[in-house]
Picture (cartoon, rainbow, N blue to C red):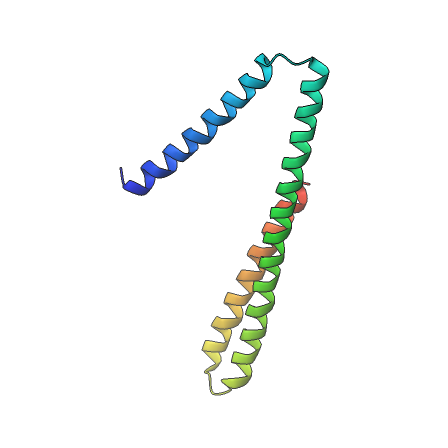
Length: 113
């Protein structure tokens, strides 16, 4: 087992252990059920907001990347008129495959909403 694998497994164990400990602390804490439910609802809302923010940032990053890649490909095609027909076909095929993959990911994300 490599050093990186140990770190990842250790980190996952640490996070899982922390979550279990936090859950037990909440269940055993001397608070009323109403306060605990309110706290858990607030915590869930905060985590949901953070997850949404992260997904939005990621989607924006992917969108920017796609836009830049598309622009660069168009520039490349303009600048390299001397490319062979086969090279142009290969480049177009690669761009189409990238678009298909992005569309698949978009659909998966849309389906999860």
